[in-house]
Image (cartoon, rainbow, N blue to C red; front, side, top):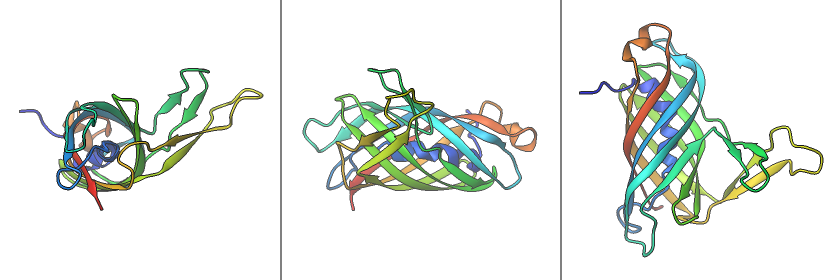
Amino acid sequence: MRRLIPACLASAVIVLGLALASPAWGQSGGGCQLKGSANLSPGLSNNDQNFTYNFGGDLSGCQSNQAGAPASGTVEAGKVLTDPATGERFQEPVPAGSGSCVSSTTNGIAIAAWADGTTTVVQYSTTGALAAVDLTGTVIASVTLPAINPLPGQPTSKTIATTRYAGQSADGVLAFEPPDPTACSGAGVTTAGIDGLIVLGSQ
């Protein structure tokens, strides 16, 4: 059996969960499996501290009551987005949290890109205890990313708008897998895998 990452790490990965803006079982009816990885700075340990993180992962096995809803997608938070047309780079909001490998909380904004070309932007918060993390959030209209060292004449920002699942809420439970769980009592955990389930529904 694989060992799960402590709550502190789990918090960081929570961002993913929100990003999983897939329709929720219920009125909107749906959910997705999430599998990805997170990078944390500084590494999480058994001592409380502030930290930031980024995350990227795949959404798969999505099921929905909405006709034509995509069955897969990707999600990320705190990454650098590159415009495929111009090559210009933009910084996604970097999620932040506080806590340790015992318990933690985080806040952030995640962006889900669906297989049909639609997008969902989710603002979320998380609470973690040991290997389990609860995520709650809301799909927001858009997020504006600042450009990284734009050249003269290039845009200084880029706005990503929600085009699917607008106005819905997000809930999820995630489990995390650090390469070396004993790092919590040493140098700290700087990377971790993540697996879980996220659902969205009407508020």
